[in-house]
Image (cartoon, rainbow, N blue to C red; front, side, top):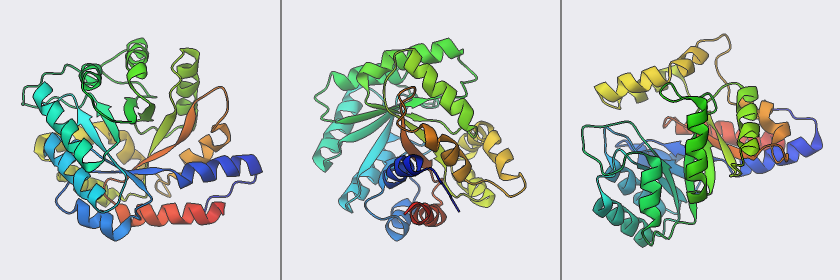
Length: 284
């Protein structure tokens, strides 16, 4: 149950929940699961899974657009092979009427790639007649093990002119997210921020999804998500409401650019959609 007593906070939160998007992973049964559980007015993004490759992301994106969804594919610098591959992806997106895309550095794979990082891929994208009206980039409010904080902020500053919004990685502490969003403003990075939160996901589902990524990928996934696993074992389990409620009073305030939320579903779509419907009911 999500209770918000302050009227202005309630309104800004209602707008954010109305507009939140779901992220899905391109597995064999993903398309069917989306059709079964997710209304077409929920925005979707499709991750680029190193185990499946970039083209699987585009295939699923095109299929879901065909069913009437608004979908943004992830483009991974580690999975787009070269400029010809990028041009082919852009052409497929244009043909399908896809206007949104999310550009990430991605985890290194054994495949050679012509792009060193997300910035290089963004530059190459803008050299094409890409036709995208919304381009997302990733943000790390808790930092990144392989890069100092200043390097991360500089990377965002370099990418910001080539993008239209930032989606964050999962962070459980609203204060850390808010401090980071305020620091973005202070550094002149003024893109809207969509905060990444895990949906109503069970531990068992998380284990199954990580297993489905392939052995090497699974190990990487589990390493990245150990904070997430730990949270799932706390008494009472995990609820996305704590993060959302903690940030609600700050949405739309001039000291930060937090605009809304982006839900990592881990393909647990039934429970996540039920949670979204309950939120809408609580805020009505």
